[in-house]
Length: 217
Ligand SMILES: CCCCC/C=C\C/C=C\C/C=C\C/C=C\CCCC(=O)SCCNC(=O)CCNC(=O)[C@H](O)C(C)(C)COP(=O)(O)OP(=O)(O)OC[C@H]1O[C@@H](n2cnc3c(N)ncnc32)[C@H](O)[C@@H]1OP(=O)(O)O
Image 1 (tube, rainbow, N blue to C red):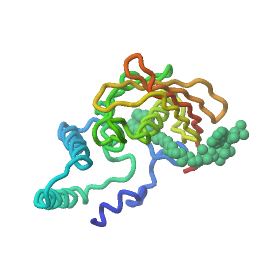
Image 2 (cartoon, rainbow, N blue to C red):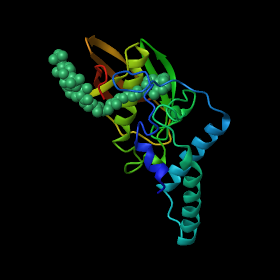
Image 3 (cartoon, protein in one colour):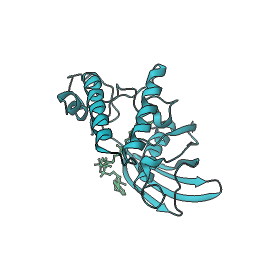
Image 4 (cartoon, rainbow, N blue to C red):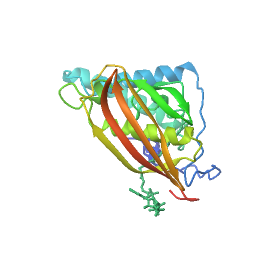
């Protein structure tokens, strides 16, 4: 892997210390990139699905690996510090344009809560057709972050996230996730959320989010 790709894990590699902070977080602002960004992210999601599902002959894999290496070379020089890539900041795209996040769309965003709908895909398969158990806390954790933000509190850290799995979560089916702030106590924000498939409750979640102290990582 190139040196540029390794830089993804460094938050300050360009030496820029002019961010505004929530605790130690950089300032995140929504962006509206051009249509090629949406096309790129969508294509990468298809590749994620394929990468975990193909059983291809060696010559096909060799050709695919060649192209992947070329793509990494093309993109490597364009790595940006945290908070500067459109990934995670393109609100109108599924998963805010971040491949880390499942491709869900925000439908409601306000002080009375956040709701989003979407589906888990082959990439998120756990076993026997159901979503991997780890993908639900991922989605819930991100939702909690958005709920805190929508409530008007500074970006906070998850102190705990408790998930109760109530029913098997299907793939390739539109599901909903919704949550709201239950109570605030100083730095502490208590939030509850649920994931549903129509009338069926799939999972419930309770979280405690803590406002960070100045400079806290
Ligand atoms: C990206 C957006 C761009 C576009 C913008 C627009 C839209 C987007 C909207 C929003 C943004 C979306 C997403 C947000 C982005 C990021 C979210 C990041 C979320 C995370 O990145 S998540 C990572 C996993 N998370 C951790 O990696 C935490 C590791 N951990 C710690 O960093 C510390 O542990 C910490 C800070 C949690 C606490 O440490 P600390 O020293 O500050 O505080 P302390 O321990 O004193 O606790 C103070 C009081 O909380 C109570 N308390 C604490 N922990 C508790 C527990 N577990 N259970 C019960 N009570 C607890 C104590 O009992 C005490 O209570 P009391 O005051 O009553 O005594």
